[in-house]
Length: 176
Length: 406
Image (cartoon, rainbow over all chains, first blue to last red; front, side, top):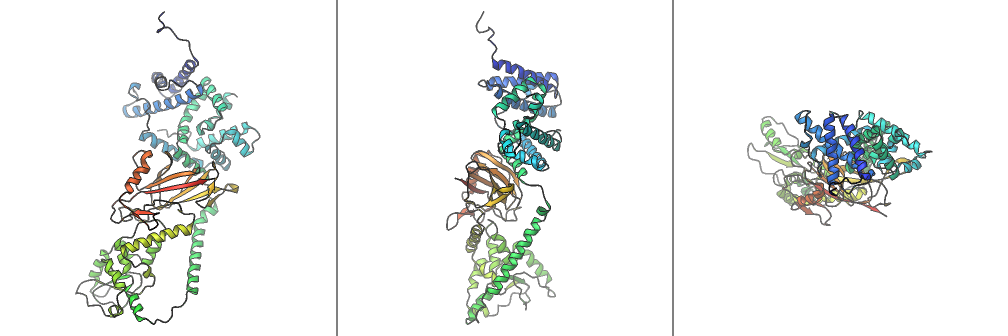
């Protein structure tokens, strides 16, 4: 057998990417068509393969794929807004290194909505969120707030986050 | 942990505060469970926002601001009342303690004082009565038409009482007085330099009755105003005097921009710029009961202590606060609406622009410095920079804020 064409043994990276593909397809299919979701997952994995060959750790691969997936989906939605629903994913550009004015404006819009929403939170939730934004980890917050267990802090944060999400209309982003 | 338990870690993912163990547990579970993966993907929008220092600072500032209470709603009125009371007390103190002037033995000084005064426009008909600090259109019969023209010929600033104008300028790093306004303060509307020369005219000249004006023309009379003597100056003197008053404001306030460097006041005469153009900052330290206290600008903070920096622009525009190449704040600001930024000790660059900047942030400071080239003038102590007269566009304000650490 030709060594060049011989199947190489699957690595941990390959198995992680395979699982990622399955998750991305399922996630995207719930928002766009199944065929487009398949193509989109392929695009995401292509970017990871071409640009991030050196990334192997699952703890790095997953957030990386999340970011690329987000860029690709936004590009898809932008295209479909301009040209209708049927969009060839080949028309969507790869995630650019720089930031587009649209991305900047969208981020500013979310932060403005977020700033308005956090003002409506209760005092305890505001304090918890402030500590988080100062970079405190949950164990540190547990000590600072005098919680009995770390699970108590998790629960507080989960409820506060849920309340904040409700204040923002159920989504961090503006759904148009 | 079960997937429902792991969902509680989502808030930490967006804020970037998960420990390595929590991250690994969350990501492993996300690969195994679709619901967790979906939740994590939806959280990406928030994570992206909070990863931006400017957006994060904005949310932090909103968290620091406490919800309005009854006291806070009344606080502006309380401060206004306190300021008015303090001002009244100062005026009364000065009035009581001020020594009465000795009987004048030099009538020449009286004559000189009569020449240093606020302007007044009157029609060609000689006016028997003089008014201090105000331009009062007279309405003698038959002279209404020429008065209207004269009033319209005045710039809007000339209608402001000189004393009010001077005090208003002293509060902020603001635009330098235009020669026209200095001329108004000196008693002339259209030729400021002769006005200053007239101020030291001999008594005989001042006491002599003015020559009758040509028929149909508009002239002006001056009156004795002690306050206006502090304003009368040539244009260059007036500029220096204004900057001195700005500097004293800094030293009196203490907390104000003591280290504010390279201040470039914009030109208030530009289109849409009607007020002083500047910014001031205040350092706040979190004290007991989560209350913020103002501290002097030379306060040394702990190395990783969170410092609250309150920046109050004197004019609306676009504010950029940079820490190296990171933007702590970038966005529009309104006049006298403070912006609160949570940061660490270090050197920050604040740039206030009249319009949004379209270039890269990494070169914003250098571009602002280049824009300041050629329009700067320097105070005698070399610490302040300002726009020179004749500048058409409002200049940016560039300030370096050094927050010291132990």
